[in-house]
Figure 1 (cartoon, one colour):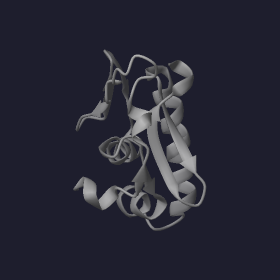
Figure 2 (tube, helix red, strand yellow):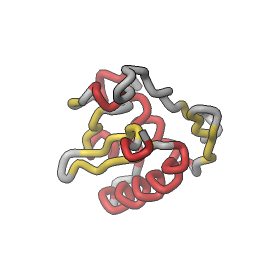
Figure 3 (tube, helix red, strand yellow):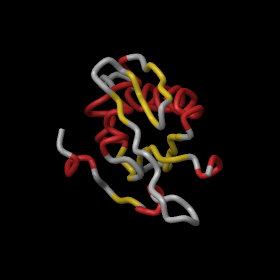
Figure 4 (cartoon, helix red, strand yellow):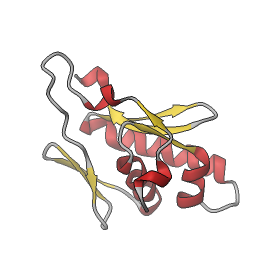
Length: 117
């Protein structure tokens, strides 16, 4: 799925290092659900893997709820399921220095946890 379909708006400062101007390593997720960043990894279940793939494609950019619901969850109870998957993904990626932020009534964004910087 092309990045142009998912991009809504973003802040490039979220992908740049603070102070030294160095860039953070962008995470990756493979077809087996293994999310890697900076030599560390977590294994994701299929529902969180699908969400992570979309959020990593547009890393540091807000992806709308509607796009995520289309590509990640079934039509029944999609908003609630999306919230649960995002919450679970947030907990799994925290040890890697990443976070998933909810922008209320807009969407979600995966980015580097600035508290870790």
